[in-house]
Image (cartoon, rainbow, N blue to C red; front, side, top):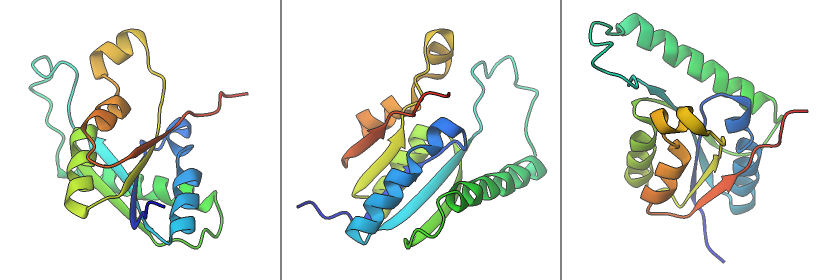
Length: 150
């Protein structure tokens, strides 16, 4: 059986992305692994030249970091006592690049992430972060399809 000592679960704090968290927690519990819960503050615009005059300051990044940590706490609290060591990490940059760099840096054994199902223009402009992570990961990636909203 494959041993997973470090599991990474990236979330964008939306309900669909949060659907991967209970699976990541269960995998970490089963394997006695550490869970890295990661949120990346995406600092890129789809049209960078059009927004060249916009430069978020340190206050913006501090507020985004605080909001991300609070969001991750809410997600974890929704799953009660999980008995897993969870490290909450907030990064800044392009989500897929930061997730892949962190996975390599920390020797991650498994990435658990949700697929969001973007389509059309949204997907063309932003691209699928999940797909980029799947293609670039050096470790196994477990994808979780979110349950449809009632």
